[in-house]
Length: 190
Image (cartoon, rainbow, N blue to C red; front, side, top):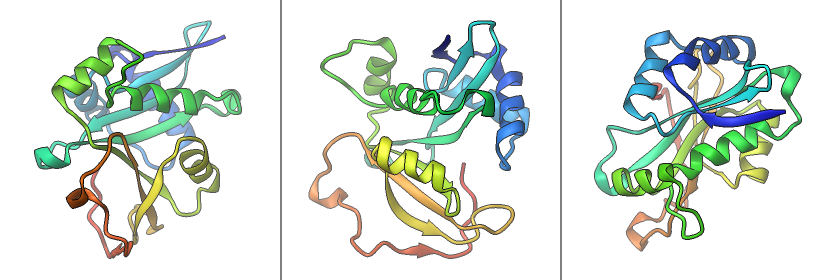
């Protein structure tokens, strides 16, 4: 059995190990600390019955966004190959995403905290254009949509889809541009 719980500082080395095993985009330990210390209610781990961390989602608020565009960002999501096809990525994303939004049917402390503290309009993430499995998860299962394509986003120059999932209704001034633009040679923001 695998359970989903909020990540703690004690989980960071296991999260980094999962990242190194699963993804080509890797981060220094200080980046994990930055997330956990700055936004402790946003990152979650999937923990097997034996205590092993088998997946994680690392999330943050975009701290350079103006208040009217407050939004969260999924920095990294990984599930060990041995634990894929169990719905863990979906559960991790839903748990983290739930922390960004208010809900009338749940009074979980994390959701209440996110509403009172951040009032996020949407959650964003980047995915490699060639990662069809992740793209299907984000679009078809989790309801994200492609906002734009960012050319040469990754270190190996692969393009990324910048994706968003809106968490509350937007006003007319917040509607996205219908011409989905392409940012060229974008500086990587995570």
